[in-house]
Amino acid sequence: MVRRLGWYNRFFSGLYTRVLGEQFSSRQTMEQVRLVKRLLRLRRGQTVLDVPCGQGRLTIPLARAGLRMTGVDLTPSYLRAASRRVRRQRLRVRFLQSDMRDIAFSEEFDAALNWFGSFGYFRDADNLEFSRRVFRALKPGGRFLVQGPNKGWIRSHFVARSEHTINGVRIVIRNRWDRNKQRVLGVWTLSRRGKVERNPTDIRIYSAAEMRALLGAAGFRDITFHDTVPGKRFTRHSRKLMVVARKPVRGTA
Image 1 (cartoon, rainbow, N blue to C red):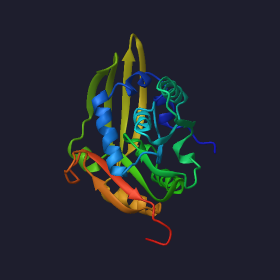
Image 2 (cartoon, rainbow, N blue to C red):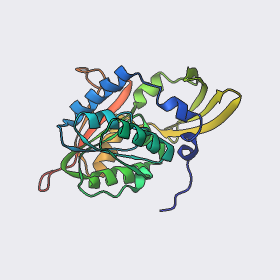
Image 3 (tube, rainbow, N blue to C red):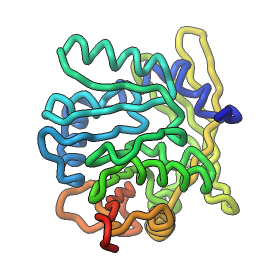
Image 4 (tube, rainbow, N blue to C red):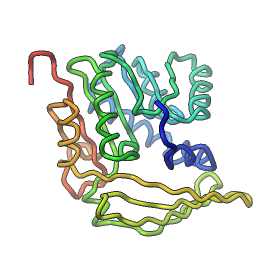
């Protein structure tokens, strides 16, 4: 399918390439890996889809833990970087380039994850289509984990401007809230050694109720919400929205 280019087609191929792999420490990454394993109830030898997988930050340590990983991403340079890491570590991971709305697997995976806020890149209809494709990709009983911003937190802690420097890249972010579309519209200005990039972002922010409705419409059941802090109950004040949904076993609801 030929799609109109979105903001994400350009954003991830520029200076942000230097930023992506440096946003989390090794310790933070491993904490997230343990969280993913717990929420998806993963066991060695199971098949897992990481979409989008970026540079394999979670895909690769999950493979080291004995899981049979497939990573899908739109950005070729990210997949090349991930493949190099896999070869150095003598792991077996399948990486595929694709828009995540176009994945075409059929009952291949025990679990799937969509991490770090990428679920809301598209309009609601496309986010639903992506969810349906993940549903088809899962075996009956398979689980789907989505992690991203929580609307309750975003609304009560909205930051119109922020500034950071990561791996030598200065990042200035200006955001505004579009109440009608329930989206954060931003402009990221990234600069390094005289090179300046200004990239728009446009991300749909979901509440738990909206995510429950969307994933339910895709066919998922047993939809539960979790806080990033172990043992803490998810509320509208939780910083992140983490949702786990299950594909029903045939003959069950």
